[in-house]
Image 1 (cartoon, helix red, strand yellow):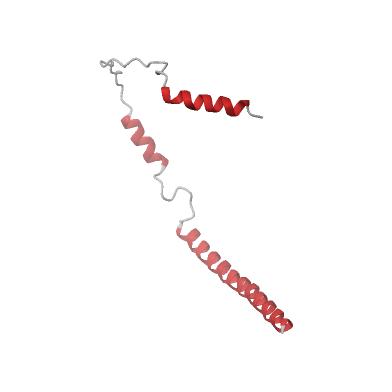
Image 2: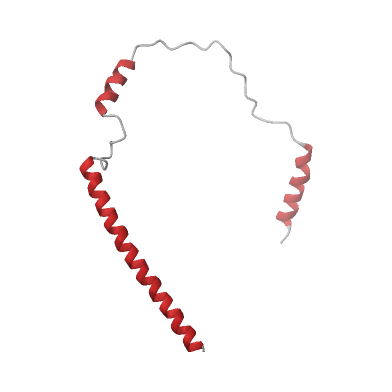
Length: 103
């Protein structure tokens, strides 16, 4: 009985490989056809969805105007370098020191 099961398993493995190759061939054909159509219609260009460089340079040259830097009127708050020690952290520091001391 195990010989029949082995034959069936091998058959399905080979059938799976055959279908994989067959659908891979179909996928390859479709990708070549659609790739050809994309090249014909110009969809394969890298800048197809982007604006042309000429339009960008025209807009950027129009936007460049001489502006004077505005002076900051609001004072920035001073940043403290240290925080107050937290009493809860002492417990964790002691625990960490005990772990470091343990072999």
